[in-house]
Length: 276
Ligand SMILES: [Fe+2]
Image (tube, rainbow, N blue to C red; front, side, top):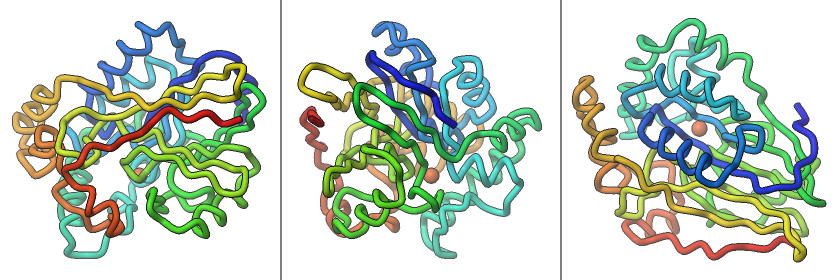
């Protein structure tokens, strides 16, 4: 699906993860900045760990922003047996995923599952003179993890598969940028779960064309994490993710490369970037 050409500031985010409070906080940010839904894109995983999957889907549909299908939407929408992250059986990630997936299967309406099934797997648009492609995991594999520390070759393979100057990816849960041979991979981070920094706020990204090129800026989203965690406790999800919303630390690092594991508890530093 091609969204066309834009000339003004765009807001990019991913990973609501059923966190209604974070979703509403981002809606307030967009309203305050005067960014309409037409210039807002979500990289997928609207539903996952937190307490309010159906409410979060409804909030997103009412908002009217563009959404790329995440592995969580694919799995729930098509009634798969699990979340599709590919976690190894018995790992902490797998056990925790069982918990939210079973919970969400019971609470997401047939209409919301139909919405999930109809989501595009990729989006394209142009901003300034840059051509963008939006995906969830890898360009072709919806559940491929790409983290900042991975070798150039991993990004080169993915970027070569894209027909774009810039790829916007999600899934990894952490914000970063990588440029390899004139193409750039950007991850906005996610709004629904902290980035393992030891602080509760989360991340989104702004794209702005200016005279120097394309300005990329990551922003922290402060929201009512206490309410999001309390909602999980109230609905029987008093698990490690309910704690992670407050501590800012992931309950499991099974999916993380060693470099990202070593960053646990440290603030992510992301200076604004200009792509000429
Ligand atoms: Fe994902």
